[in-house]
Length: 192
Image 1 (cartoon, rainbow, N blue to C red):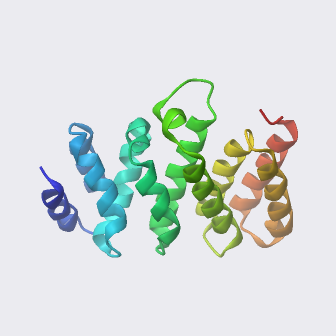
Image 2: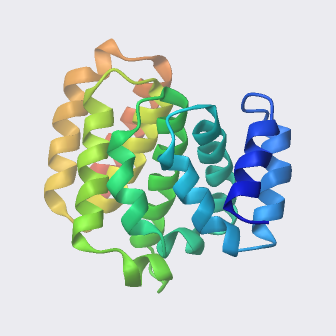
């Protein structure tokens, strides 16, 4: 299968049918050469195909996080350009996974490859997601991402607390619950 075959497969899938996306993700997981094409398709088009690609990308990255390491430059340059809420939600989840891996105690491709510029793009985009009118899942994923990165970069936790305390009263119960947990964790965390 090549990039164009992958586009054809994505086009056949009805909407973002989770089961069909899981089937496609299994194919990609057996052929890593398709992964770079999946990342490109995710951001190359502003249509249903890219939405399906991003949802598939989330499924694949949940199982093979190390694969995104070699595509971080393209990924981070494009995350702020997304406009569809569902696409942003999937990408915010991927950012959270990247941040967890970046701050883990163990060496990984993410830790070795992620540049300061790429990290800055993730940080800036996540703060934008927290400040703008997005659904709570996107905001809570952004919170997770920033919490983990904030373990290494101290000013992030300070800024997060300001934003959370300002917005918590106007957000959903899901957001408020997550925000309280994150604020508690921030109080217990020391910057590395």
